[in-house]
Amino acid sequence: MAREFTYGPFTSRRLGLSLGVDILPRSKICTYNCVYCEIGATDPTNLVSPQCRITEPSNVKHFEKELTTLFKYIKKLDSITFGYNGEPTLNSYLEDFYEVAKIVRKRTNWKEVPPKLTLFTNSSTLYKQEIRDVVKKFELVLGKLDIATQEDFLRINRPHRDVPPIETIIDALTHLKSEMPKNHRLGIQCLFYQSYIEDFKSNNNKQNIESLSKAINKIKPDIVQLYSIARIPAEYFIYSLDHQNLVKIKQKIEKSLSNSTKIYCY
Image 1 (cartoon, rainbow, N blue to C red):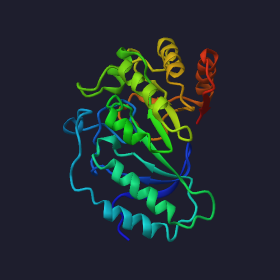
Image 2 (tube, one colour; image 1 turned 60 degrees about the vertical axis):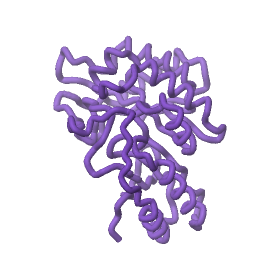
Image 3 (cartoon, rainbow, N blue to C red; image 1 turned 180 degrees about the vertical axis):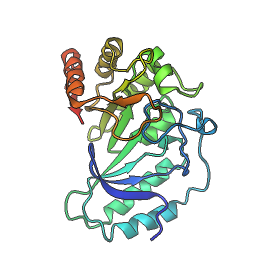
């Protein structure tokens, strides 16, 4: 069977056995051009505004057929995971794809607990209410936030000029958490890295970690996932932070927490 939207299942270090769902064009489309991106650099023509909407024919029926066929053979999954090739909330049909996944999951005879519906987002579009109204339908939302100072945000995430300031993104994540159903979970993903270039500092710096801690206290996510690079990053001078240093960052953030957020290192 030719697969248009899905890949895997594969073992994810954060999600368990995951079936990937990619509803973006085959070339990466994103609102960021992060120095550490493991998909690769964003082509300048595909670095888009958070107001951009992909409105090509949705082929939702093809997605339904693809999932239905796959689930004849796959009877155990931990997650059906939307994301990967850029920012999935740019697709105008995200809600339609979500509804199809929900329907096909329900009519599948799972051997164990049915997989959760998960969404990766870089959080850049969440300031828009209509986007949050769709995103909050997912049972697990993993929102990116590894920078909490505007200076580092512009230097490291290299956003499109229309992307709002980092404080607006933090506010949007805070609103999303308050709007989500109680049985749905919000996770914050923080990728930390090191740099070979002395004048291009890592986000593993005191000011950023303190600012991130304040942001996490404000957002009150259910979980925070600290991790580092596992594949080739977009820029040659970026490399992985070891687990020991991730644990140190975890301890620093935990000291400043005033809520029940759980922090994990991967």
